[in-house]
Length: 348
Image (cartoon, rainbow, N blue to C red; front, side):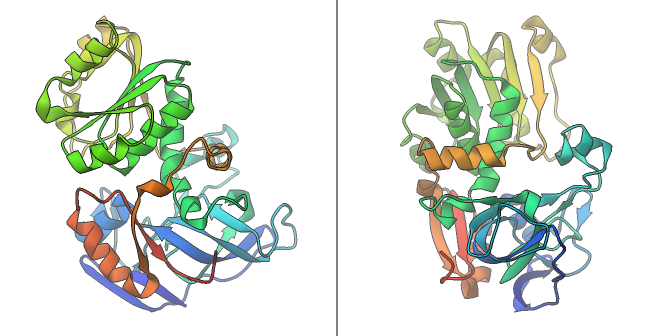
């Protein structure tokens, strides 16, 4: 099967590769239509590793996908050939304690697409558990379906934040995940969401959404701006979505007493954490790792029209242009939010 293969750091090939193809009784076979390029895909391409996950053998990239079911296992119900779907890319051991307690994203044995040594989905077809495959309504495009995976991160963050109606939220970082977090916070009931960054291009994209207020941190104090918007009280929720160690400097100055900080971004190195500043406001600190139990709600929000993710797709590439797509993603153009690869043009 033809696939986009990371042979080693900085070496991609578009070639035939033998992938697992056996269809189990609870699986579906899916013809891939769209795949988004994630920052983790790019990091594996440029660095060959993320922390302890090292590319030691050729690996198919991609984990943000949507497509069409072409075959269903004998015990699958609710999905049939012809259904348009998106897929949750992590496959846990459903008998593990983490899964039994509803935290399957924390299962140490989870098999996540395009995390070494597990192959991803930038290929013509994949076999996937039906339990982690979700039908898309007819009016939701495959392009949006492939955006459900990054949006699920935002949904998980907003869920952990326990946002109350009308709350003021601050999102640090206007990259793809930061914008997804901001949109999820609005959908969860936030009255306004301030999103901060250095990249004016990304701030301009985020600012096109009603309820999102862009703030360029070159132009002033984010803490002072949050205080100004809240009569000196501070933000009810602060999401750190940049992964920058500098973002933690004074992060609790943004927060209202009794507020919540949600850590979404992953700093490359250990950071300084001001415990006393957190204690002085009795801050609740939450962390997230990927997501769990949010895909159906994410699809429902897209179906309702309350969240529109298509404006975040900066460019599309054909499957034969996959290497060029990754080269562009590695450039890190400030105006790019999400690049997608059209694996099969006829799959709609």
